Image (cartoon, rainbow, N blue to C red; front, side):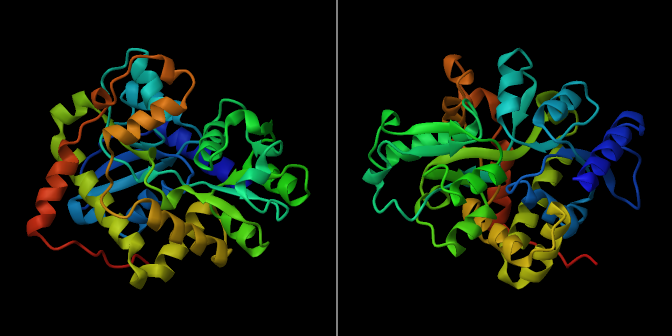
Length: 336
């Protein structure tokens, strides 16, 4: 945690006191500062950065770690930065509050990355009736995901008790200790569950349920003034995602993920790589349906009249698709 705090404060200092976001050319590359949050689908962005994918398209990305999306959205609104890689909920909340310039242009995660796990005492979904399911807190994404999982298993929300327990580590301890009967988890805790022999009743990464986990966001005004930079960023991101999923790059990707998570647990890092390869199997695609589902999952946003298409600009994805029909997919060389 100390290392993450250090990164946060260094990044914040850089953001506040460095030169404008699009700096002078550096060795022929345009420098672009990009806030990002720690998360599985955001690791695609990190691997794209470390693999040299952005440089291939004339961009030198300067990643800025920010814990939450709110700070990044504020930086984007104030034009301290012009691109960011974050979750979409905060973006839509700001958009709904009047900041209509914000626009999502893609997604590095277009499926949920959670699994529903129970203790071995649960032998079939019906056994969850009357049982306790651990979530982070009421109203959080885990609350929505647990309710969705219960419904997909043929139960109703009234059949179970949702217990607020905090972060993933606390929920795992509670489940392993028998204090709750089930919970929802993301990688790499999914690996711990399998190794412990706990049944996994639902793996959202293997379903057709669309959901925006995180992705690139910019502003319509920046697109108008510098569309080429936005397009080149999307090209680099797409190439980096290809690099991530290619089994030939497995060792390099695990090393980059180790940097991203500040971890040397190779087994858990490979679990993360495996799962997110399934979550985003193609281009950084975002759809109106995935945005609609994300809006519906938020108790505040779901009460507003928001047209998902109004928050999207799909023109960059369409251009990527056209380009890839006629060009070879770039495979960047491994960075040292």
